[in-house]
Image (cartoon, rainbow, N blue to C red; front, side):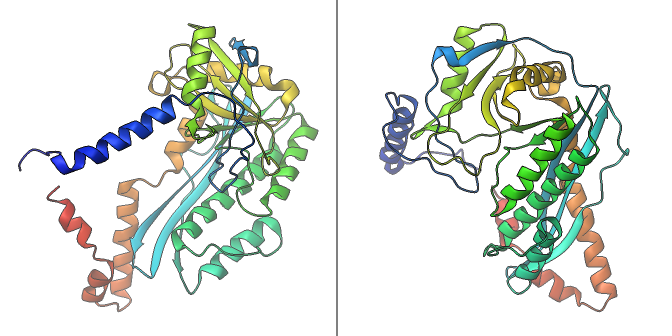
Length: 347
């Protein structure tokens, strides 16, 4: 196969793209009066921090007990007008640094989602958690799958909040934000439960779209923090610009290991305990494979992700059962065939 070449006609487009990237990188100055975007991806505009917003972070004593919550989902079969989805979530208990839960993750929920049944599937899951019907259902069936996983995650957070005790910590993959309408009521109930029990709740985002106007915020904050506290952990309190009614807790960026190249957005439910809670995460973030990221969250992520072999097993068993139930093999193969797979063999 010939080497990949960049055609001359693409060079002007590449130049324009590089100019855009440089303009984003070099963006400086005040924020002006622009309002923040608030959407289901938690896009949030923040005020550019000053040096006084940063503080060093020393390792604290890790919590005796914590729960790490994450979820995973995958479309295992795509029929065009419908999909077969698999999803699950888990609150993994960790006691004195050791996994205290079952040896295997929960089996995924496997469900068809189509343009005909999406409302019923989504409404049932929503009703189970919130006790009422949603105002609307996502139109896109792939978004329905994502929302089913999100609702499962919040159910696990709610359950963990019921069993954790004073001094325990709940770590959540992602922000503490009501991205689905009305779920802020569930979040507020969770926050009330954990506050009453003396439990700390922290959201850790693997990827963040925090921004200064159009510029990504984390690279700038990381550079500032590393300059201020070289060879040390640190954290920075951030102020959200515009509407923050859907965000619960206070917003930070932190470096949880001095040698890590990564910093993370952290949402902390109790601002008066933020330094203490964040310092508890440093001893949990020393695994060389995930340096700077709390290991319990990495562990639960690996447990709940729907891996390619697991998706392939689900496809295999579904096909086997369908054929035993009278579905013609030719119909199955034609319905779930994807010519992209043929094309991708030559890439």
